[in-house]
Structures are given as structure tokens and as C-alpha cells.
Image (cartoon, rainbow, N blue to C red; front, top):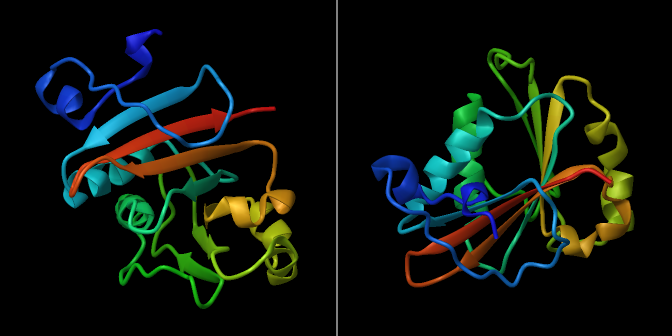
Length: 179
């Protein structure tokens, strides 16, 4: 295992050794994998804010993890990092929440489609417009509960998996999938 691929919030802030954890998130072994550990909700948000700087239009990001794993917390940081106006709410009951950015990001992102499949199935997401969201040349898609609608997801995507490691501790695994 090449430990240079893995980082933690503490390693980023103190230069200390990376903290490696084992995650139960399903996926393949791919070269573009990053692993972070966080000790608080604010550190999880900080990873989201930092990750926002890596995004460009057309990105499709899935967020998985059990209830309470930190998907919404990570997303709040990401939305903040992209410049979206609060409040940042989970779209569980509305399927998709659109954030129109007040100004485009440096990479040209103008819209964020935040979708949630917790209470629906793939065909519901398809009818709601996932194909349109994913093809917006100035947008990105954040998609929670991808396992509920895996049949409608694009093959090229970034998968972010969050796992509870303790009362406040979380593991965040980011996989960039290019099939």
C-alpha cells in the first residue's frame, strides 16, 4: 500500500503521518483513492470545503454511508467551498435541490444539483431529471444514497464514502472512478 495516496486532516495540518483506517464501503481498487480521518463535524466540513477546489463542471459525485455518517456535513462544507448560499439542507423529501451560485467558481461551475435517493428508486431519479443534471455544462451533481439508484448513475464519477469511526470521528474515502 502506497501511504502517499492517503492523508488525514491531522497529516494535512501538522505534517504528521497519515492515519489509515479500514472502510467497509463497496468499490474497486483504483489508483485515484484518498482517505481522510476526521475527529469532528468541523473537520469533516473542512474536507468538503477543500475538496470543492478540485471540482470542475460536469463532475458527478456520489455520497454514501449510513445515516449519521456525515454525508450532509461533508456536503455543507463542499457547498460552502463552492460559494453556494445557505441554508444547506438535505434534499431527502424533495429529491433534488438546485443551488445557483451567485458567481461562477474559478473552474466555471454555476449550478449544483444536490439529489437524494433515500426515499426513491432509480426510475424516480430518472424521471426527476438526472440525465439533464449530469449533462449541464456548467453544473455538478452531488448524489446521496447512490446504492438506491445505481442503475441510473454515470460510469465516470467520484464516489465519496463516509463511515462512523467513533462518536465524532469519521473516515472519508474519495474514489475517482474512470471506467
